[in-house]
Image (cartoon, rainbow, N blue to C red; front, side):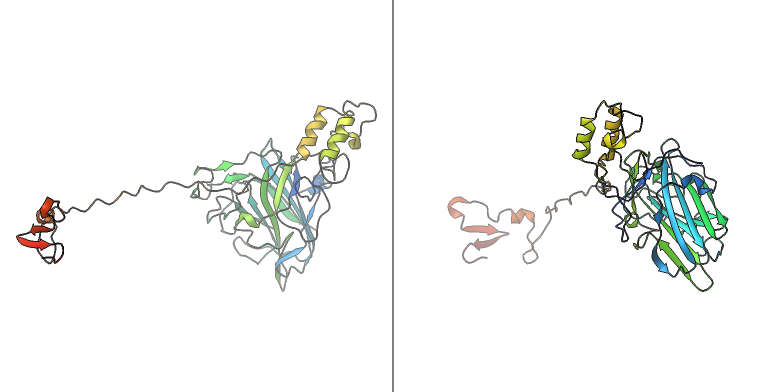
Length: 370
């Protein structure tokens, strides 16, 4: 499928667009454009997307991989995330599910609700998806069978030396498909809860390519942060955006890579323009004039701050009842055998005789005792 308009998908800090960095910080987001995908294994429709290079060795020695890269899209209509991966691999080896390090495979880790926490043993708060390079099976590191309610569609397999993967994933804030329980109270539900994809949705998503050669096994990623199969805070940050054109942030009229007040001044000075309206004059939607639609795109280009990390709901503990007061009704002093009735005379105000008291038939003096 070809597209008439090139699309935005760039490495950026919040509100910035720019070129990919060699040493990438996973907290610096990539932008994913809103575009539907026909999942058939043919990556021709991804030709003009911004591809993320998988050029960092995460483990081992992936010696037979010449190059690897991936791209991400999303569609709010179908509420799906799309991932395309292309791996040039000179030694194809395919295996059976659950046999780690024995075959070529793709691993996708997803924290769609940006929880930034442990996925859990049943992959509730985040999911780890493994796809065989031969397109034979799809599973997880926990050997849990993946159904269509999590991966709606997928296609994979070799084309010459190239392995291609195309996946449509349902984004879950919490996935109960493998029996997970919302123990942290993050969604207040033990049923599956989807994230409603929209402009400026933050999430964690990372891709790892595993490659088996005759003498070695190794993994490639975009960054060297480990433990991607188990924790959301180890994943690359992604920000979902509406697409405009290739290489430009929505609203960046000046072309300096940041959407700010300078771009707003350009938009205001050309507002209402119909003759000669172009991107650099504020025509961000390319419809030939500068109007309210372009003003909306300008504001979409100013990314909101990333939400603060989720603080789990503290589920109330059973109330702690106070211990009952001791019952002294029949208490005795060990040395004198006095019951509570006898004790009641100690310290009693006897007026002029207060310094001398009678306790249990014995005389008591405040100076000398019994």
